[in-house]
Image (cartoon, rainbow over all chains, first blue to last red):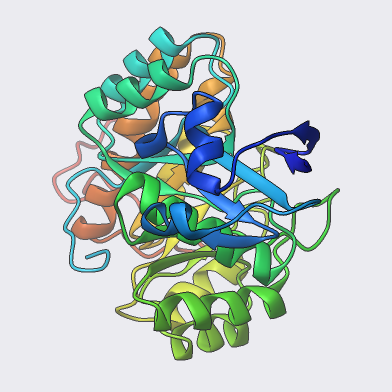
Length: 65
Length: 252
C-alpha cells in the first residue's frame, strides 16, 4: 500500500505505525509521530493500522529558535 | 519564576543557524543560559549528535512550535514535543504572516487555551498588545513573550514605549522579550525596563564570533537585570552639576 511518509509517497507492507517505525530504522524512543495531523503517542503506535493514503509524520529534535 | 522554576540566568538561547554543532555547544556554555529552545523536524542528518548535544548542555529545554500557522498544527506539534523532550514547557508560536512572522493572536489564544487545559506550561510568542496578553492569561498562560521586533530582524525593541506599557500593565507576570533582539545593548535595555528575561537566537548564531557574542549577551542581560534591581535614576530635562559648587576656589 502507499502512504505519505514525511511528505513523500512511500510504499510499505507494515501493518501498523509501530511496524513502520521499526522497519524504517527510526529510533522509536527518540521520535514523535502524527497521522493525518493528529498526534499518536508512542504507546499507541502499535494499535494504529496503516491504510492507503495516510499522511504520516515522524519528527526528531532539531535546532530551533 | 517561570512556571515554578527560578532561573539564575535570564537569557534564553535559540539553537538554530550556528556555524557548527561545536560552536553551538560553546556558545551555550559561554552565554550562561539555563534554557535553550529547540524544534521538531523531519529527521535529517546529525539527529543523534544534536540530541547528545542538548543533553550534554545541561540546560532546560523549551521546545517551540515554530513554523505552525494554525492552532491545530501548533497543538499537535506541542504534544509531539512533550513526548520527545519530556517537558510540559512549550514556546507557542502560531505565525500569522509568512513575511513578518507576526503571531496570529486569535489562533494563539485558541491554541493556548487548549494546551493550558491539557497541562502544558505555555510560553506564548505574542505582540505587546495588552488585550491579547489579558486573553492569554485568561487562557491559563503564566508567562507572556512579547516580540521586540520581527523574528531574525535584529531591530531591537521596535516599540519600546509599548513594551514599557506592557511591563507596567502586567505587574507580577513574568514577561520575556522574544525575537528581534540584535545587540547586547538592546537586551540590556529590555532588562532595565523590568522584563524578566530575553530570548534570542540569530544575534548570537550569526555573529562573526558566536561564542564571544553569547558571552556578551550573557553579561548584558545580567547587567540590565542588576540595573533594574538597583533602580535607575529618573531622567531630567536640565543639567544638574554632579560636582558640588560648595568649597570651590575663587580663581577668576
